[in-house]
Length: 250
Image 1 (cartoon, rainbow, N blue to C red):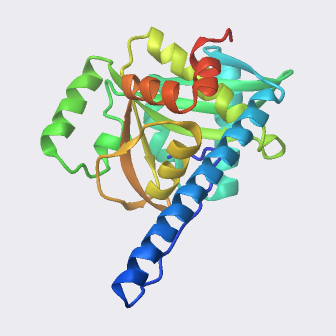
Image 2: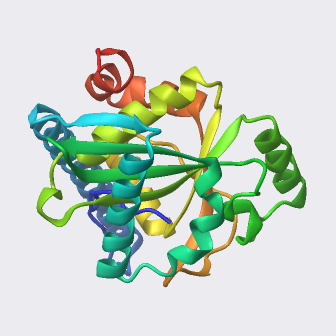
């Protein structure tokens, strides 16, 4: 279960009008307002992203040393307790098959992300979360055995560093590393509303593949994002972000 920075979308409601002419007029007006609101929201999201990208970047490391891994896991536990996200004991068995990235400010670990390889242990999104289609679930398990899919398992950012670009920096480095390793898709366990906000704000393409259920203190569902989809969508909907995320030197 992860907790990225969020971009909140606007919401719109339409009032019913009795006469046919009024309904048509109201419908056109509502559609205009809705599209106008959508353009404003996207403009604000794009402006916010540009500001974030211009902020100070952080050194992101792929952790392999025991001391650095311990430091990252300590931050993970600290944030989990602060936010009351649930029991990290359930994730201990995934440490041997975790790929850990962390952001550092000098020698201090200020952000971290744990990716769960889908083998040998089946990751939580397939092990404990319901999936709509049993055939899809089996296909995803097989893709995991072939190291083509992994779970974007945890993210933690130190309290005084939230609102920075740490989350994006970590996603950027992790995405490129996963691509180089032949990974074709990421999964996450997250509240569907927050996934939609993240997709809208960051041009990600996570799709819900199971019903929401109580998990680690929230009504969460399993989602999947294919890398080919996010490249295609981000490159057309947010080309500046795509260039920074995929092409510019790290």
